[in-house]
Length: 302
Ligand code: 13P
Ligand code: SF4
Image (cartoon, protein in one colour):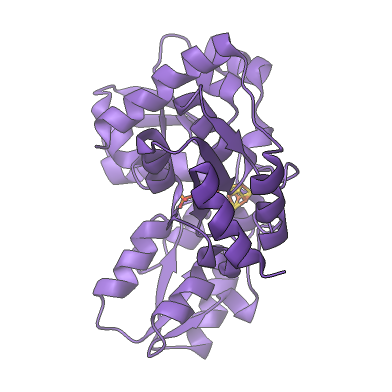
């Protein structure tokens, strides 16, 4: 069977939209309506008039789409696609973190569960984290789960104390400064582009730090021809496809792969559309509270 053709047919028949994160297997772009980073996809999820949302991403992304669209069917093609960082903080741990640091606004990275979002003031993505923290006009903020993104935001702003929870993305957090130096020696003409989920000592050696979209736009607007790209393999795959005249290298020539992001396959998407499962559900009370946190972010990042 030509699954791509069948997906497109079912999509029209059922008025479904397919959203895909840039870390997905690249063949998923063949069926996706919108491809992008966490912010762009949440904005698209907030706008869609489709009846069904197929989210080719990980659990927290589909959950966010469901919170924004309580009456629509939201489907995560492979239900096992989770996020290790989002799983590093639960509601009880959030409450302990808040009680140790009382009366401080709480910013959660979108890479968090609906329960966690339901007790935070505002959420953010890596694209808008600086803008979101700034919008609070606070001297101190609590930031979770990603300590690296939180500390990077603190450095960008300079006048806000960002108190971070001890969470991180295992994929980005493991990249180290020694590796960046070695890779730079191998490719001396290449600029280093890094995602802010990397550790501070690593980011200090990068030429540009930005979200998935930030990195892609940097390449688009740059006259440079060679880049060392310190983020998930999906971004490199798309850059190589879109800029065949430029060269892209992994840190130490070893791709950084988020296995969860790679779980959704074309076959899973076909089955998801055909059977309308596995559907994401969120408890109505939790969803209503988490919606405030997400909508507040979307309001700031219009
Ligand atoms: P962005 O999509 O915000 O760049 O985040 C990267 C990521 O790790 C998503 O899980
Ligand atoms: Fe989570 Fe990291 Fe995978 Fe993104 S790359 S989904 S933050 S584990």
